[in-house]
Amino acid sequence: MIKRSIPKIKLAKSDFIKILSGYDLGAFKHASYFTLGWLQTTVLLTTTKGKFVLRVYVNRSARHVWYEAKLLNYLKNKKFPVAAPIKSILGRLVGQYQSKPYLIIEYIDAHPTKNPNSAVQPRHLTEVIRVIAHLHTLTKGYAPAYVRYHQRFDRQYCWREYKKNTHGTRSATRDAWLKYELAALELPTGLPKGICHADLNYSNFLFKQGTIAAVLDFDMSFYTDFIYDIANIIFWWAWPPHKGLNVRRAKRIIAIYSRYRPLSDQERRHIYDALKLIILIGVGWCAEDEFDQERKKVEYLNAVGRNVF
Image (cartoon, rainbow, N blue to C red; front, side):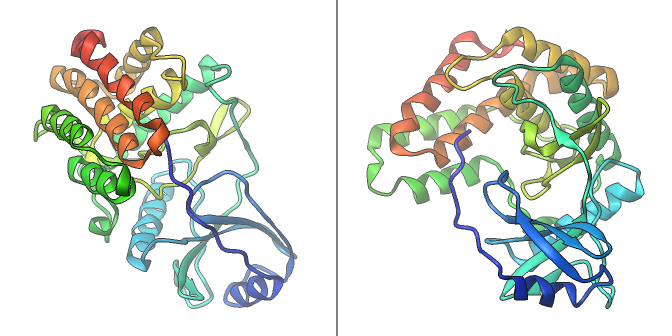
């Protein structure tokens, strides 16, 4: 999936001091920006009381951020491994600075696994699958406050993004192809639903002594069919760019997930469609010279058929 880059904001020392003045987190010492992450501005703050993470939302509404704060609190209370948001002196979870909403969250002293495009660590992959299955078990039927303000990654979203991002590069042939592929997706109503993380790349999992200490970045999470996340794991962990789908690993991902949350036959059948949708959303995001690369992935799935899994 090709993600578009969005300009981030830079904060000065005086900005950090002003933000921290609303919290009982000690005096500002220094700050450093995280290099991972493609949408929001994330900063490691060091104060006289410890380390904390400031996350400023460049292109999100306050309601969008409130949803994330409510979800993180819910998961923390369920003992799910997340970095919890910290309340201000006034008891608020979400702050606003220079018209941008922000959270201050716990700092977790742990590290991501290796990039699976280079080398997959089987124990770490199993741990990722286990934790995501647990997320689904905890959130089945659960829709946090403000959930409607989080973007749903569905057919309609894909088409909107495609029209918005292709500008003058669209053609009738490409339009027709994408419309056909979106219409051909089989995603029946009635599949088990809850919160899907929706961005399961390796950098969003922090490990400590072989287990996941924290799942990061619920910015793209939304309420949908759980198979979306299963397909997302396959996309990020079993389909390296330019190498093709590792079918054996994809099947293993599904088998391991089923140990922790058993899948119905209907869910198994439509993981294929969820994976196609994820790739088609990538088509909506991609640059002109990447279109054919993404289209080939869809055509590969069309050729092998849904029984590939």
